[in-house]
Length: 436
Image (cartoon, rainbow, N blue to C red; front, top):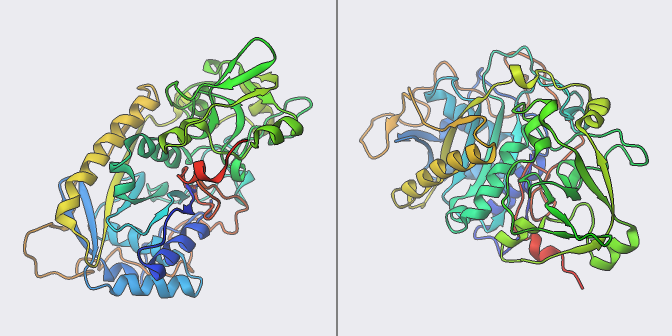
Protein backbone atom coordinates (compact mmCIF):
# COMPACT_ATOMS: atom_id res chain seq x y z
CA UNK A 1 0.00 0.00 0.00
CA UNK A 2 1.74 1.50 -1.70
CA UNK A 3 1.58 0.98 -0.07
CA UNK A 4 3.62 1.68 -2.78
CA UNK A 5 4.50 4.62 -4.88
CA UNK A 6 6.49 2.85 -7.02
CA UNK A 7 8.79 3.65 -9.39
CA UNK A 8 10.71 3.54 -12.42
CA UNK A 9 14.30 4.41 -12.53
CA UNK A 10 14.40 7.82 -14.07
CA UNK A 11 18.17 8.11 -14.20
CA UNK A 12 21.25 6.04 -13.58
CA UNK A 13 21.49 5.23 -9.87
CA UNK A 14 24.05 7.26 -7.97
CA UNK A 15 25.00 4.13 -6.04
CA UNK A 16 24.16 0.97 -7.96
CA UNK A 17 24.30 -1.37 -4.98
CA UNK A 18 22.47 1.00 -2.69
CA UNK A 19 19.83 1.82 -5.29
CA UNK A 20 19.25 -1.87 -5.89
CA UNK A 21 18.79 -2.58 -2.19
CA UNK A 22 16.22 0.19 -1.73
CA UNK A 23 14.41 -0.70 -4.93
CA UNK A 24 14.10 -4.36 -3.94
CA UNK A 25 13.04 -3.35 -0.44
CA UNK A 26 10.30 -1.24 -1.94
CA UNK A 27 9.18 -4.11 -4.15
CA UNK A 28 9.02 -6.44 -1.18
CA UNK A 29 6.80 -4.11 0.84
CA UNK A 30 3.81 -4.25 -1.42
CA UNK A 31 0.94 -4.21 0.98
CA UNK A 32 2.68 -6.65 3.26
CA UNK A 33 2.23 -5.92 6.94
CA UNK A 34 5.57 -5.51 8.69
CA UNK A 35 6.14 -6.59 12.27
CA UNK A 36 6.58 -3.95 14.93
CA UNK A 37 9.31 -5.66 16.94
CA UNK A 38 10.12 -4.70 20.50
CA UNK A 39 11.85 -7.81 21.75
CA UNK A 40 15.54 -8.87 21.78
CA UNK A 41 17.94 -9.80 20.29
CA UNK A 42 19.04 -6.52 18.77
CA UNK A 43 19.99 -6.00 15.16
CA UNK A 44 20.51 -3.26 12.57
CA UNK A 45 18.97 -0.58 14.77
CA UNK A 46 22.20 -0.61 16.80
CA UNK A 47 24.13 0.61 13.77
CA UNK A 48 22.02 3.76 13.48
CA UNK A 49 22.61 6.64 15.91
CA UNK A 50 19.52 8.61 16.89
CA UNK A 51 19.34 12.38 17.32
CA UNK A 52 16.61 14.96 17.61
CA UNK A 53 16.58 18.22 15.70
CA UNK A 54 13.56 20.32 16.53
CA UNK A 55 10.59 18.25 15.37
CA UNK A 56 12.70 15.87 13.27
CA UNK A 57 14.29 12.62 14.37
CA UNK A 58 17.59 11.77 12.69
CA UNK A 59 18.91 8.25 12.14
CA UNK A 60 22.57 8.46 11.12
CA UNK A 61 24.76 5.76 9.60
CA UNK A 62 27.97 7.72 9.88
CA UNK A 63 30.44 4.93 9.06
CA UNK A 64 28.43 3.09 6.41
CA UNK A 65 28.17 -0.12 8.42
CA UNK A 66 24.37 -0.15 8.47
CA UNK A 67 24.13 0.59 4.75
CA UNK A 68 26.50 -2.29 3.96
CA UNK A 69 24.42 -4.62 6.14
CA UNK A 70 21.22 -3.41 4.47
CA UNK A 71 22.60 -4.24 1.02
CA UNK A 72 23.73 -7.67 2.21
CA UNK A 73 20.37 -8.37 3.82
CA UNK A 74 18.49 -7.34 0.68
CA UNK A 75 20.78 -9.58 -1.34
CA UNK A 76 19.78 -12.55 0.81
CA UNK A 77 16.09 -11.70 0.55
CA UNK A 78 15.71 -10.19 4.03
CA UNK A 79 14.10 -6.87 3.13
CA UNK A 80 12.51 -6.44 6.54
CA UNK A 81 15.96 -5.63 7.90
CA UNK A 82 15.68 -2.10 6.54
CA UNK A 83 12.17 -1.33 7.79
CA UNK A 84 12.73 -2.93 11.19
CA UNK A 85 16.01 -1.05 11.61
CA UNK A 86 14.20 2.24 11.21
CA UNK A 87 11.28 1.29 13.45
CA UNK A 88 13.36 -0.21 16.26
CA UNK A 89 15.97 2.55 16.21
CA UNK A 90 13.20 5.14 16.50
CA UNK A 91 11.44 3.44 19.41
CA UNK A 92 14.75 3.05 21.21
CA UNK A 93 14.59 6.77 21.98
CA UNK A 94 10.91 7.65 21.58
CA UNK A 95 7.63 6.65 23.25
CA UNK A 96 4.87 4.76 21.49
CA UNK A 97 2.91 7.98 20.86
CA UNK A 98 2.83 7.86 17.07
CA UNK A 99 0.33 6.37 14.64
CA UNK A 100 2.74 6.62 11.71
CA UNK A 101 6.45 6.93 11.01
CA UNK A 102 7.64 8.63 7.82
CA UNK A 103 11.24 8.32 6.59
CA UNK A 104 12.90 10.89 4.31
CA UNK A 105 16.39 10.29 2.88
CA UNK A 106 19.14 12.85 2.35
CA UNK A 107 20.82 10.76 -0.36
CA UNK A 108 19.57 10.77 -3.93
CA UNK A 109 19.54 7.23 -5.32
CA UNK A 110 17.98 8.41 -8.58
CA UNK A 111 14.97 6.20 -7.97
CA UNK A 112 11.54 7.78 -8.00
CA UNK A 113 9.45 5.83 -5.55
CA UNK A 114 7.70 6.05 -2.22
CA UNK A 115 5.44 3.65 -0.37
CA UNK A 116 3.21 2.87 2.57
CA UNK A 117 3.66 -0.35 4.53
CA UNK A 118 0.97 -1.36 7.03
CA UNK A 119 1.80 -2.45 10.55
CA UNK A 120 -1.71 -2.93 11.92
CA UNK A 121 -5.34 -2.55 10.90
CA UNK A 122 -8.57 -2.93 12.81
CA UNK A 123 -10.96 -1.33 10.34
CA UNK A 124 -13.59 -3.31 8.45
CA UNK A 125 -15.22 -2.45 5.15
CA UNK A 126 -12.27 -0.76 3.40
CA UNK A 127 -11.14 -3.67 1.24
CA UNK A 128 -7.96 -4.73 3.01
CA UNK A 129 -8.94 -8.38 2.60
CA UNK A 130 -8.47 -8.03 -1.15
CA UNK A 131 -4.75 -7.40 -0.69
CA UNK A 132 -3.84 -9.26 2.48
CA UNK A 133 -4.82 -12.68 3.84
CA UNK A 134 -7.05 -10.96 6.37
CA UNK A 135 -8.77 -7.58 6.46
CA UNK A 136 -8.15 -7.14 10.17
CA UNK A 137 -4.77 -7.96 11.66
CA UNK A 138 -2.90 -7.15 14.86
CA UNK A 139 -6.13 -6.01 16.45
CA UNK A 140 -4.94 -7.20 19.87
CA UNK A 141 -1.64 -5.34 19.79
CA UNK A 142 -0.97 -2.68 22.37
CA UNK A 143 1.29 -0.84 19.91
CA UNK A 144 -0.08 2.49 18.67
CA UNK A 145 1.77 2.44 15.35
CA UNK A 146 -0.41 1.68 12.31
CA UNK A 147 1.92 2.16 9.38
CA UNK A 148 5.24 3.18 7.91
CA UNK A 149 5.74 5.63 5.04
CA UNK A 150 8.90 5.92 2.96
CA UNK A 151 9.13 9.24 1.12
CA UNK A 152 12.54 8.71 -0.50
CA UNK A 153 14.93 11.60 -1.26
CA UNK A 154 13.96 15.03 0.07
CA UNK A 155 15.08 16.75 -3.13
CA UNK A 156 12.30 15.05 -5.09
CA UNK A 157 9.76 17.06 -3.14
CA UNK A 158 11.54 20.28 -2.19
CA UNK A 159 12.15 20.80 -5.90
CA UNK A 160 8.57 19.93 -6.87
CA UNK A 161 6.09 20.76 -4.08
CA UNK A 162 3.00 19.88 -6.14
CA UNK A 163 4.29 16.38 -6.81
CA UNK A 164 5.34 16.04 -3.17
CA UNK A 165 1.86 16.97 -1.98
CA UNK A 166 0.24 14.44 -4.29
CA UNK A 167 2.63 11.61 -3.43
CA UNK A 168 2.47 12.20 0.32
CA UNK A 169 -1.32 12.33 0.11
CA UNK A 170 -1.34 9.02 -1.73
CA UNK A 171 1.04 7.20 0.59
CA UNK A 172 -0.84 8.34 3.68
CA UNK A 173 -4.13 7.63 1.93
CA UNK A 174 -3.06 4.02 1.39
CA UNK A 175 -3.78 3.46 5.05
CA UNK A 176 -7.42 3.24 3.96
CA UNK A 177 -7.55 2.87 0.19
CA UNK A 178 -8.02 2.36 -2.61
CA UNK A 179 -8.91 -1.33 -2.46
CA UNK A 180 -12.68 -1.65 -2.40
CA UNK A 181 -14.92 -3.63 -4.73
CA UNK A 182 -18.40 -2.45 -5.65
CA UNK A 183 -21.64 -4.23 -6.54
CA UNK A 184 -22.89 -2.52 -9.69
CA UNK A 185 -24.92 -4.42 -12.25
CA UNK A 186 -23.00 -5.17 -15.43
CA UNK A 187 -19.59 -4.32 -13.93
CA UNK A 188 -16.85 -6.59 -12.55
CA UNK A 189 -16.39 -6.38 -8.77
CA UNK A 190 -13.10 -4.46 -9.08
CA UNK A 191 -14.09 -2.09 -11.89
CA UNK A 192 -13.25 0.99 -9.78
CA UNK A 193 -9.62 -0.05 -9.36
CA UNK A 194 -6.68 0.62 -11.62
CA UNK A 195 -2.95 0.18 -11.04
CA UNK A 196 -2.17 -2.86 -8.90
CA UNK A 197 -5.86 -2.90 -7.89
CA UNK A 198 -4.76 -0.49 -5.18
CA UNK A 199 -5.48 2.85 -6.84
CA UNK A 200 -8.57 4.27 -8.49
CA UNK A 201 -9.07 3.53 -12.16
CA UNK A 202 -8.08 6.17 -14.70
CA UNK A 203 -11.76 6.15 -15.72
CA UNK A 204 -13.13 6.90 -12.25
CA UNK A 205 -14.48 10.45 -12.00
CA UNK A 206 -13.29 12.06 -8.78
CA UNK A 207 -11.68 15.27 -7.60
CA UNK A 208 -8.23 14.50 -9.03
CA UNK A 209 -7.78 12.41 -5.91
CA UNK A 210 -4.26 11.62 -4.67
CA UNK A 211 -5.47 8.02 -4.83
CA UNK A 212 -5.56 8.45 -8.64
CA UNK A 213 -8.40 8.59 -11.11
CA UNK A 214 -9.25 11.87 -12.81
CA UNK A 215 -11.70 14.72 -12.62
CA UNK A 216 -13.87 14.32 -15.74
CA UNK A 217 -16.23 16.81 -17.32
CA UNK A 218 -19.22 15.88 -19.48
CA UNK A 219 -19.05 17.60 -22.86
CA UNK A 220 -22.75 16.92 -23.50
CA UNK A 221 -22.14 15.09 -26.79
CA UNK A 222 -21.24 11.61 -25.54
CA UNK A 223 -17.63 12.55 -24.87
CA UNK A 224 -15.84 13.34 -21.61
CA UNK A 225 -12.62 15.26 -21.01
CA UNK A 226 -10.14 15.30 -18.15
CA UNK A 227 -10.05 18.43 -16.02
CA UNK A 228 -6.46 18.40 -14.81
CA UNK A 229 -6.60 22.09 -13.99
CA UNK A 230 -9.00 21.56 -11.12
CA UNK A 231 -7.69 21.15 -7.60
CA UNK A 232 -6.58 17.81 -6.22
CA UNK A 233 -8.25 16.70 -3.01
CA UNK A 234 -9.48 13.46 -1.49
CA UNK A 235 -12.74 12.41 -3.11
CA UNK A 236 -16.04 11.84 -1.34
CA UNK A 237 -15.40 8.11 -1.45
CA UNK A 238 -11.88 8.58 -0.02
CA UNK A 239 -13.35 10.58 2.83
CA UNK A 240 -15.78 7.78 3.61
CA UNK A 241 -13.06 5.09 3.56
CA UNK A 242 -10.87 7.24 5.83
CA UNK A 243 -13.67 7.45 8.37
CA UNK A 244 -13.96 11.22 7.99
CA UNK A 245 -17.39 11.28 6.32
CA UNK A 246 -20.44 9.15 6.92
CA UNK A 247 -22.06 7.15 4.13
CA UNK A 248 -24.86 9.73 3.94
CA UNK A 249 -22.34 12.43 2.97
CA UNK A 250 -21.08 10.62 -0.13
CA UNK A 251 -22.74 11.81 -3.30
CA UNK A 252 -23.46 9.92 -6.52
CA UNK A 253 -20.28 8.48 -8.04
CA UNK A 254 -19.54 8.31 -11.76
CA UNK A 255 -17.37 5.82 -13.60
CA UNK A 256 -16.74 6.05 -17.34
CA UNK A 257 -17.27 2.86 -19.28
CA UNK A 258 -14.85 3.13 -22.19
CA UNK A 259 -14.68 0.45 -24.87
CA UNK A 260 -11.45 -1.44 -25.51
CA UNK A 261 -11.33 0.11 -28.97
CA UNK A 262 -11.59 3.62 -27.53
CA UNK A 263 -8.93 2.86 -24.90
CA UNK A 264 -6.63 1.60 -27.66
CA UNK A 265 -7.27 4.74 -29.70
CA UNK A 266 -6.11 7.06 -26.93
CA UNK A 267 -3.45 4.66 -25.62
CA UNK A 268 -4.84 4.58 -22.09
CA UNK A 269 -6.12 1.96 -19.67
CA UNK A 270 -7.46 1.72 -16.10
CA UNK A 271 -3.89 1.56 -14.73
CA UNK A 272 -2.67 4.67 -16.57
CA UNK A 273 -1.30 7.51 -14.49
CA UNK A 274 -3.72 10.39 -13.77
CA UNK A 275 -3.45 13.63 -15.71
CA UNK A 276 -3.21 15.84 -12.64
CA UNK A 277 -0.12 13.99 -11.47
CA UNK A 278 1.37 13.87 -14.96
CA UNK A 279 1.07 17.64 -15.04
CA UNK A 280 3.02 18.03 -11.79
CA UNK A 281 5.79 16.03 -13.48
CA UNK A 282 5.82 18.21 -16.58
CA UNK A 283 3.84 15.80 -18.75
CA UNK A 284 0.62 17.76 -19.14
CA UNK A 285 -1.94 16.39 -21.56
CA UNK A 286 -5.70 16.37 -21.99
CA UNK A 287 -7.81 13.32 -22.73
CA UNK A 288 -11.17 13.24 -24.47
CA UNK A 289 -12.99 9.94 -24.94
CA UNK A 290 -16.34 8.63 -25.94
CA UNK A 291 -17.78 6.96 -22.86
CA UNK A 292 -20.93 5.74 -21.16
CA UNK A 293 -21.27 7.01 -17.59
CA UNK A 294 -22.06 4.43 -14.91
CA UNK A 295 -23.46 5.92 -11.72
CA UNK A 296 -23.74 4.37 -8.27
CA UNK A 297 -23.85 5.28 -4.60
CA UNK A 298 -21.80 4.31 -1.56
CA UNK A 299 -24.32 1.54 -0.95
CA UNK A 300 -22.61 -0.36 -3.80
CA UNK A 301 -19.40 -0.33 -1.76
CA UNK A 302 -21.18 -1.38 1.42
CA UNK A 303 -22.88 -4.22 -0.45
CA UNK A 304 -19.50 -5.57 -1.60
CA UNK A 305 -17.36 -4.85 1.46
CA UNK A 306 -19.78 -4.48 4.35
CA UNK A 307 -20.31 -1.35 6.41
CA UNK A 308 -17.26 0.55 7.56
CA UNK A 309 -16.46 -0.29 11.17
CA UNK A 310 -15.85 1.90 13.03
CA UNK A 311 -18.25 4.37 11.49
CA UNK A 312 -17.29 7.97 10.82
CA UNK A 313 -18.85 8.97 14.14
CA UNK A 314 -16.44 6.69 16.01
CA UNK A 315 -13.34 6.99 13.84
CA UNK A 316 -10.26 8.98 14.91
CA UNK A 317 -9.96 12.51 13.57
CA UNK A 318 -6.46 13.25 14.82
CA UNK A 319 -3.31 11.41 13.74
CA UNK A 320 0.21 11.61 15.06
CA UNK A 321 3.19 11.13 12.76
CA UNK A 322 6.94 11.31 13.38
CA UNK A 323 9.21 12.42 10.53
CA UNK A 324 12.53 10.53 10.46
CA UNK A 325 15.55 11.73 8.49
CA UNK A 326 17.86 8.96 7.25
CA UNK A 327 21.42 10.29 7.00
CA UNK A 328 23.92 8.01 5.26
CA UNK A 329 27.68 8.32 5.16
CA UNK A 330 28.78 11.52 3.42
CA UNK A 331 25.37 13.22 3.49
CA UNK A 332 25.29 16.97 4.15
CA UNK A 333 23.00 16.71 7.15
CA UNK A 334 23.23 20.29 8.39
CA UNK A 335 22.48 21.67 4.96
CA UNK A 336 19.30 19.62 4.53
CA UNK A 337 17.56 19.49 7.90
CA UNK A 338 15.76 22.81 7.55
CA UNK A 339 14.53 21.79 4.09
CA UNK A 340 13.10 18.56 5.48
CA UNK A 341 11.48 20.43 8.33
CA UNK A 342 9.88 22.65 5.73
CA UNK A 343 8.49 19.54 4.04
CA UNK A 344 7.16 18.32 7.39
CA UNK A 345 5.21 21.50 7.94
CA UNK A 346 4.02 21.67 4.33
CA UNK A 347 2.77 18.07 4.26
CA UNK A 348 0.93 18.58 7.53
CA UNK A 349 -0.80 21.70 6.26
CA UNK A 350 -1.54 20.27 2.79
CA UNK A 351 -3.01 17.05 4.15
CA UNK A 352 -5.35 18.90 6.48
CA UNK A 353 -6.53 20.96 3.51
CA UNK A 354 -7.01 17.81 1.39
CA UNK A 355 -9.31 16.31 4.04
CA UNK A 356 -11.23 19.61 4.06
CA UNK A 357 -10.44 20.42 7.65
CA UNK A 358 -12.12 17.30 9.04
CA UNK A 359 -8.99 15.89 10.72
CA UNK A 360 -5.68 16.95 12.22
CA UNK A 361 -2.20 15.67 11.40
CA UNK A 362 0.35 16.30 14.15
CA UNK A 363 4.00 15.94 13.14
CA UNK A 364 5.75 17.48 16.13
CA UNK A 365 8.31 15.41 18.04
CA UNK A 366 8.10 15.15 21.80
CA UNK A 367 9.60 13.34 24.78
CA UNK A 368 12.57 11.96 22.86
CA UNK A 369 15.51 10.78 24.97
CA UNK A 370 17.94 11.03 22.05
CA UNK A 371 20.78 13.52 22.03
CA UNK A 372 20.21 16.81 20.24
CA UNK A 373 21.85 16.99 16.82
CA UNK A 374 25.04 19.03 16.93
CA UNK A 375 25.64 18.62 20.65
CA UNK A 376 28.55 16.44 21.78
CA UNK A 377 27.64 13.05 23.26
CA UNK A 378 29.49 10.01 24.50
CA UNK A 379 26.70 7.65 23.55
CA UNK A 380 26.95 5.53 20.46
CA UNK A 381 24.21 3.91 18.43
CA UNK A 382 22.15 1.61 20.60
CA UNK A 383 23.49 2.83 23.96
CA UNK A 384 20.00 3.66 25.11
CA UNK A 385 18.34 0.64 23.56
CA UNK A 386 18.32 -1.74 26.45
CA UNK A 387 14.57 -2.14 26.85
CA UNK A 388 13.02 -1.71 23.43
CA UNK A 389 15.54 -2.64 20.76
CA UNK A 390 14.94 -5.69 18.64
CA UNK A 391 16.18 -8.09 16.05
CA UNK A 392 15.72 -6.58 12.60
CA UNK A 393 15.45 -9.82 10.71
CA UNK A 394 11.67 -9.68 10.34
CA UNK A 395 11.43 -13.41 10.94
CA UNK A 396 9.90 -13.41 14.43
CA UNK A 397 6.31 -12.56 15.33
CA UNK A 398 5.20 -9.33 16.92
CA UNK A 399 5.16 -8.93 20.65
CA UNK A 400 1.39 -9.25 20.42
CA UNK A 401 -0.81 -10.24 17.53
CA UNK A 402 -0.17 -12.55 14.63
CA UNK A 403 1.99 -11.90 11.63
CA UNK A 404 0.19 -11.51 8.31
CA UNK A 405 2.24 -12.55 5.34
CA UNK A 406 2.13 -13.09 1.59
CA UNK A 407 -0.49 -10.51 0.72
CA UNK A 408 -1.52 -10.50 -2.89
CA UNK A 409 -1.67 -6.80 -3.66
CA UNK A 410 0.82 -4.23 -4.52
CA UNK A 411 0.48 -0.61 -4.97
CA UNK A 412 2.83 1.38 -6.81
CA UNK A 413 2.50 4.87 -7.43
CA UNK A 414 3.40 6.86 -10.19
CA UNK A 415 5.89 5.40 -12.33
CA UNK A 416 6.03 1.90 -12.49
CA UNK A 417 5.34 -1.15 -10.91
CA UNK A 418 8.75 -1.76 -9.69
CA UNK A 419 7.66 -1.76 -6.19
CA UNK A 420 4.17 -2.50 -5.41
CA UNK A 421 4.46 -0.70 -2.26
CA UNK A 422 2.14 1.76 -1.46
CA UNK A 423 4.20 4.07 -3.28
CA UNK A 424 2.07 6.75 -3.88
CA UNK A 425 2.57 7.72 -7.23
CA UNK A 426 5.49 8.55 -9.01
CA UNK A 427 7.07 10.21 -11.58
CA UNK A 428 8.12 8.74 -14.66
CA UNK A 429 4.59 7.99 -15.28
CA UNK A 430 4.42 10.69 -17.75
CA UNK A 431 7.29 9.11 -19.61
CA UNK A 432 5.67 5.76 -19.48
CA UNK A 433 2.68 6.48 -21.61
CA UNK A 434 2.15 8.58 -24.63
CA UNK A 435 -0.79 9.04 -26.79
CA UNK A 436 -0.97 9.26 -30.50
